[in-house]
Length: 76
Length: 282
Image 1 (tube, each protein chain N blue to C red):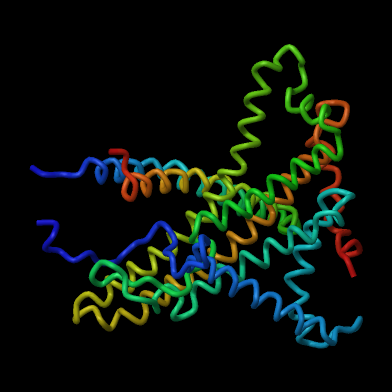
Image 2: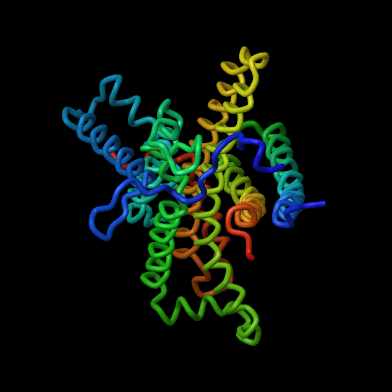
């Protein structure tokens, strides 16, 4: 069976993007919950919410970068 | 067997070279960045040509997002006037560069590449090149290190990287140092990953829906959905880059002044968020 280990490794690297996925959902649900408790605080919540989303999503982007490196510039 | 299947799309991680000016290579993402900058400069010239204190409709439309973002920056620290132009400038630059990548022809119209079926586009979205995002991240890094050194002095900056209980300094100093350096990597990688993945996603959706005749009716609706997604994500990533720059500069200014309660100070200044409209620049 012929194969390409780099392709398998790239696929394995993207499995761990499930972590940021769950983290983003938890963060989003907390923000919506806080908004439901106190609709006037939406403006106060907005900026830290966006920051938290970005920082969490960056971890998923790190997985994606590893996968890209494995596909395009695999260590020989 | 892999040689028989033609690849569905051609993905270029590096920006392709269009021509060379002597030893200097001009890539298609450089062209994209220059086009975005020229657009911003033209818009700036046009909208400030006849600006008035009581704005007409077009001027207030353009001022709306700028005032919103400047309002958010104004509620961060008391020295916001020193960096509000950087934050708003970063936001506008990345926003225009990202949205430019969604226009028809960007990323698709180009020259014939080496391989069969490969197209070297004339214009590539600027943030789809790691060089562009790394350049912006380096600007942000230099600015927030400069603010930290300006507020606390170089020795003070190193002391505050060492952390509060001086006994733990051999442990905390490398941790803080690496976390500050990793901001460079995370800023650039986040923007690059989002825009590049968006490009690949659009190309994949277009290729999938035009691959066979019976899915051709989907070829209008499905890429339109993903174009809308990319519109939203381009704007969000621009906002996130600008807000993270503001957050890093806020942390550099307000960090550990005397006692270890840097976050308490920034918490106090954010209480004035409902008064921020009075503090926006005219």
